[in-house]
Image 1 (cartoon, helix red, strand yellow):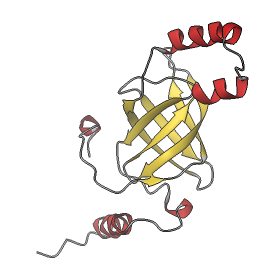
Image 2 (spheres, helix red, strand yellow):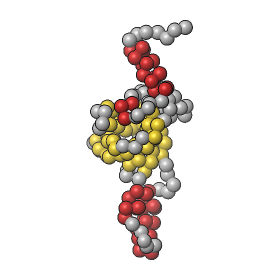
Image 3 (cartoon, helix red, strand yellow):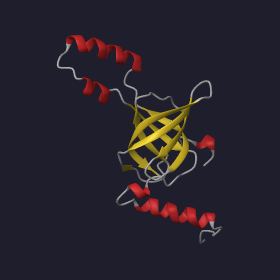
Image 4 (cartoon, one colour):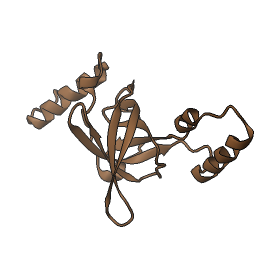
Length: 156
């Protein structure tokens, strides 16, 4: 897949619900790296759905690092979950603290996560080690990738 092909809308491998902490690296408008903690919600060989305290915009470039496997992948944000602009939501929550007890800070933090999806520029095997029973198409993808790198052509 070429960089311009991100967000094609076609599911190429199965998604697996998987929650664990990961790290996201992005560039700010001045080109400086910003490191953020995030949590995966669902993963595939072609991307992941995550949540993070920072909101993301479509096509924003991100680099994901998976602590447990030591692997990383680059891609672009292909989907975001926006019910309200985050600034309005924060302001409403501040006002609710004063008029709607029992408001808990713990619930506020859970609700303030921004959900988004990232599609890799190139498919990556970041997750197999973390999934008890990887889907069959993940195994098929890995075999195809290995034969391609070995220069073995598919049978006619």
